[in-house]
Amino acid sequence: MDFEELTELVVELEVDDIADAVKVALDEDGKDPFEVLTALTKGMDEVSRRYEEFDYFLGELVLAGDTMKAGLEVLKPALAVSDRKVEKIKVVIATVKG
Image: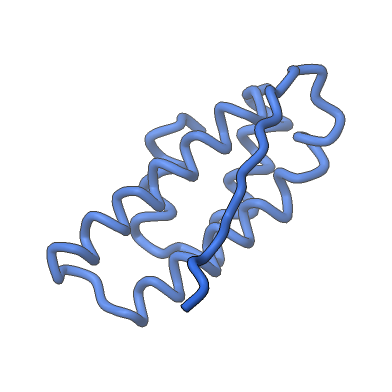
């Protein structure tokens, strides 16, 4: 399973196939979990682009979210045990009163 195929599964809203595809990428192909995450994220970026161009609508956004969630459920344990260091940042969110 290559990264383009993972990206395409998200774009094509293949919620039933994404979990198995992520398992294959991690277990059989030995892909880095962070690279798999990047491939899934690229799929969501493409879904966003299609939404902005009115090719996808709200229903497709919901299905894309479900597809991403299904892939992440398989990916989370692999990310947790990865020895790759991730730089943590702080994000401050605020609103103006009044």
